[in-house]
Image 1 (cartoon, each protein chain N blue to C red):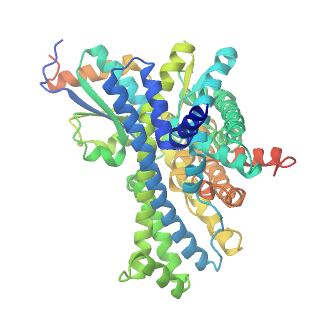
Image 2: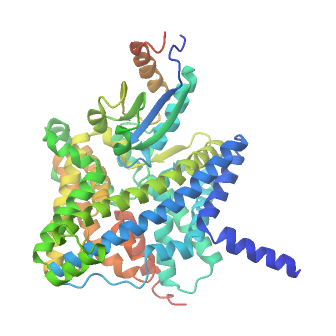
Image 3: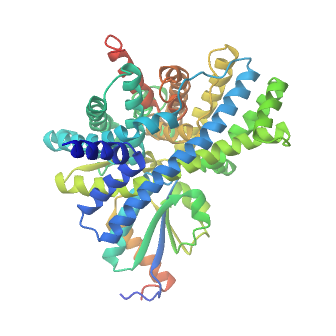
Length: 433
Length: 102
């Protein structure tokens, strides 16, 4: 008995509590049941494991850039940088395995729900958002119930994410059909709240027939913004330079010195922007690597279990239907966010960080939905709504996740913030136990 | 129709960040190429990595294909990420233009 107990403890500590290894094992099982060849199964598991480790390295680089940005921009506004007791890396280190189980069990519950309730019809296949939604739901549950056990966390977490994956493509399906002109696939993206509002109120501000974005000609030079790595580096770098001009010079010199004793603080400001973008690129590369193994397995499972179901897909699948609306929504989002960044800073509320990826993808998506109902005016409205969500969401959710993974607030889409707000509100009467 | 190109085709599907829609497009492309009987290795990635990838074929949505022109001999804009039949038709036509499919 003693040996068995020791063995189980060893397995728990070394296989299940090491998120990289656990994800590798999940992929191993997932590809093995598809009866792939042994060497393919093995390679897939190794790639997924490497992906998780790369994700952690990316988070380190990204958080370093984020902290420098918040410190210098905060100082320019005479603000303290946002406070936190924990970091995303700590949180993923501690709860990463629970999150891996939430994605897996959550997906199975989701598939069963769609199978039992055919009107739901869409199977959510946007892998990276399945990962992030599981992370944010786990974080807010741990915030509400700091002593929550792994089993309860996994159980509640999987049910919540499964319900979200069922309802999100379903409630936006009507607007989605109008956008893509068919019911070939659903919309599976955490920008759905902004898209739905843009679709609902787009018609009130304009008309698709009179104001179609695709009749507009956008300056071709803006197109470099479509590369989110470039736009992140440029925007964060430019804001760092502006902030450096207003920031406390001693603090600026101190921070630059921490990076390198010989670097000029102005050059350091530019490097911060570049490192921030590099960190995000590494982080996303890691996520891409383990998803590439998981998503096809998920698709295989759902194709087998629910023939005739439709996939709910990532936001760029709507971009071809109105590419100009994407740019209109993105620009409107970015301008709105930057204005709010100035207002929030000047009012002393919060040091906002422009999240270029979330301004581009959800902003572009809301633009396409807005355009389908209200032309360019609807697209611009969608962009503004997304900008509002991102600014208010980041400023409010940072504090709500200060003891788990506050950096998630700077990586969020509209639905993430809504989930955090709603779970916070519902759990408030029971929280702390 | 026979495949005239000696090496297996290197295909890259591209989206903005290289995580979501390019992965779906990869699965669609794999199906289309298998139905065409074209030996191919399909990978997915982001805009940045597309430039140095040395792919024979790049598939992406129209928003990106303008920037990707010239990065591969065949660059195909895609509107419907699930449309295997449509992709098959476009690809076989473009392959014939290249002389890869005779």
